[in-house]
Length: 158
Image 1 (cartoon, rainbow, N blue to C red):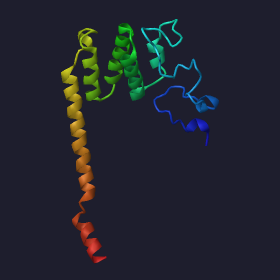
Image 2: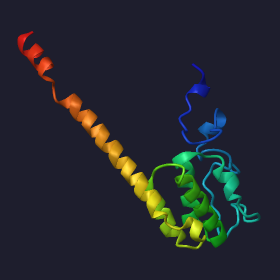
Image 3: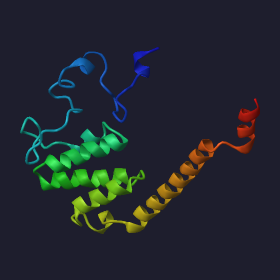
Image 4: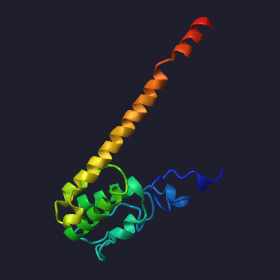
């Protein structure tokens, strides 16, 4: 089996392999996969502003959202913070996590305009879909828990 088949870094595009994967700090000093240490809109080196979009492009799904929220929470630059929140909002709307969606829209607080305000109907629709799926799975599980009359009689007489 190839080492490429064992990709344990789910959500990471271009996960490190070989020597990079064994570095104690997760990679090289200038590795874009490392969490940013930006202060007041500057990159780790302090010279150039961090490219949030390029950094986020290295990740997918929940990992991408987690990285963007990390940037938004720790960044001192409001423009970078809003960019990270905007991108997190857009990524969340691709999925079905209404709780995280509500959290991000609250952090945005109307600062990105009406397109990024809480869409209550979307959140309610996602919640209803989740509730229906939960009930379906619970019913299916209960069907496996309760032995049928034929299986019970077989155990009794076999």
